[in-house]
Image (cartoon, rainbow, N blue to C red):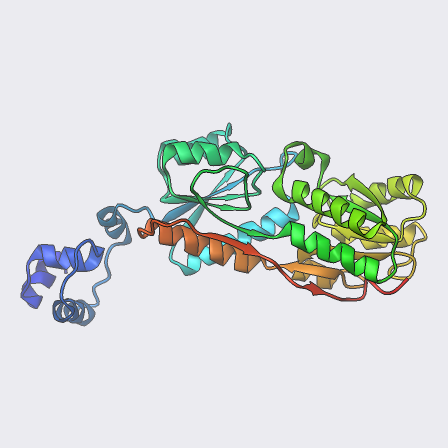
Length: 332
């Protein structure tokens, strides 16, 4: 059965059936019900490609993820998986474009309009991908924040507030010499948003409380904490508190501290920003602020689809998450 037969059985014009399928023009509730009844009786399933063509949509969303050192970190992969799941539940597929603005895959998304809109993740403070998308007029949402004044949508977690919460928690426990496990030096040099905001917040909050503070970048790799802890022990032998925002290095952080003769949470209390799954999987479980990857992904996808649906006003969402006390921190 085709559109013509449906129109004949429902007693309407072919164009009316087309409007019912595409949603391009409003039709009365009674007419829509008559058309849907005919389609249900005949087990008619609209062709997805034809519907997309009629609506001027591909049903595809682009996901721009910059690789670090030629690979995606565990935290990046977690967010990618959450975005794919959120998009699938909204009947959309995801095209992954690794690399930055100069990367061919990203430029193909923009130039060839292969997707309806783009989600930009791992945003820098000044991100060339955002500037490129603004020029292209393609709908997009940033998972993160930039300093750009351009009118674009974004959703982010408040690293400034969460790192300050971690510092206050450690200070309240009597810790007086604190260290921040930052993201990799490469991301710090690229002015990656969370790395920049976390360092500024950490230094400022430590200064407010009059405690010693040191910031050390750490490679975004499993096992990277071993060398990082060796450097830390040599540089700051009296440290008694650690704040971490490096999810990739987190699984090896606590074992590395123990191997260096620093018991957790006895000698050193550790607090950080990570996904709940990672935080609960360390030994002992990590105190800190849990980043809700799925909530971030759902919010970003919903915002992009609303923009594609015609929403004109700008939307911004900043998530400030509570600190959860677990086994990695206790009074000095």
